[in-house]
Image 1 (cartoon, rainbow, N blue to C red):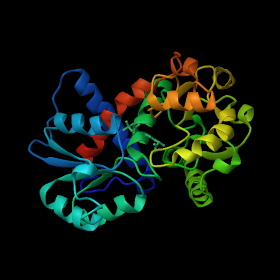
Image 2 (cartoon, rainbow, N blue to C red):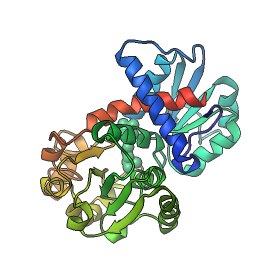
Image 3 (cartoon, rainbow, N blue to C red):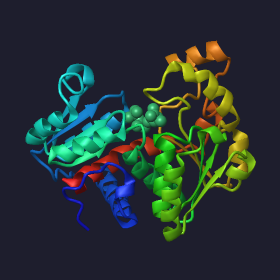
Image 4 (cartoon, rainbow, N blue to C red):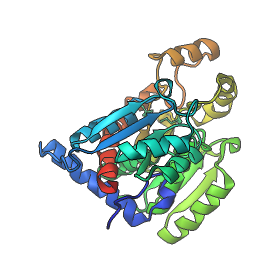
Length: 327
Ligand code: CP
Ligand code: NVA
């Protein structure tokens, strides 16, 4: 299999075999790193990392992975570059494409990363858009496989805002890899009908299923994986908090949810997470709305079923695999 020169914009663009190939490569790179075996396979190459939204994991994963592969990386944040304000995406892409071997983009609309890819002439990697978070999916599937030993047939239930990047991406990757996906939330937050239909079509070929439900007991019963995400995503206005808390609190991941899931169920979350009051926003929300935990309780977050830090580590191994295979 050869992915050289390919963009990594969304998992809908890849076959199940290609997705598994990237996860397998991440497993190899992780084992090598743990054994102290260097893999400076891309010595002398350069990558540009554009972040129009903030990041801890994705930025660090790209920087560490690039260094481990022998590459140099340049971090560009929008306040310190011309992107968008004085220079269009198409022009930026053509400039960076002359200097760099690959470009990562985190930002707003998927159309922006698509535009970068159209003009760059080098591989472009999506580090999160409003619609999709594909590098996160490789890490999440790698983590599920590490803990459960399989992917096909696994029952994954997502609770929370199911219209945004994380849930969209879970639905796609589950369909591609033959998992049973359930979005369990208030129907106002069900994913886009067109994307659901596309995923149902893919799932029909892979043995997966796609389910939407408002019923927490039914949606989480026997699940192997419980997933959630923040209720308000980057770039959304503060005004939506009140409505989100009202609508999504019934879909908080609690110990009752985990008890209703399968006995060996794991909990995953892309992070960052509001599970306690140790953040500025967590404190502000608590003062305003009187809740101390949001999408997941601290009890579940800190429990043995929670594999969120394995998942965070795997961001680096999977992002390294994507760069290694596409460059
Ligand atoms: N999960 C994730 O993408 O984290 P960052 O926003 O910190 O990159
Ligand atoms: N849905 C979240 C994911 C963060 C990694 C956001 O877009 O802010």
